Image 1 (cartoon, rainbow, N blue to C red):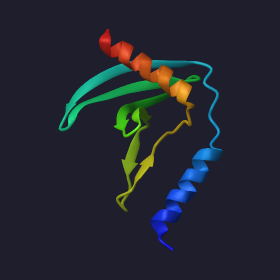
Image 2 (spheres, rainbow, N blue to C red):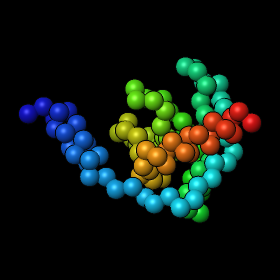
Image 3 (cartoon, rainbow, N blue to C red):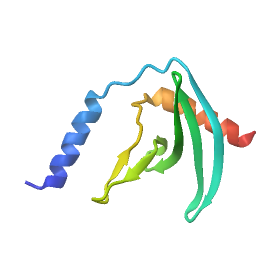
Amino acid sequence: MDTSKAKKATKKAEQQERTFIEVREHEVKNVRVVDGRNGDLVFFTLVLNGVTIYNCRVATGKNGDFISFPQYKGSNGEYYNNAYASLSDEDSKKILEDVQAAING
């Protein structure tokens, strides 16, 4: 059996069973636009229900923009999240709108 197919199937099953945190309040702070090699990068600080998560990033994927939480690269070359919150699409959209509003001033 191809292990990459098995991993994808497992990941898809996990996404279907995912539960989201209840976002009672959020605040976007310290929005920074940095010139990167492949275009601008947007970093920000996110306060979720009183918990501050530094160095969140707006990432662009095949399905549009999403929130990328801070990560570190392990000795095996894989990336691991320092902090993560499972956000609903609606909450992610609200946060990304706040980031865009902060950029526009």
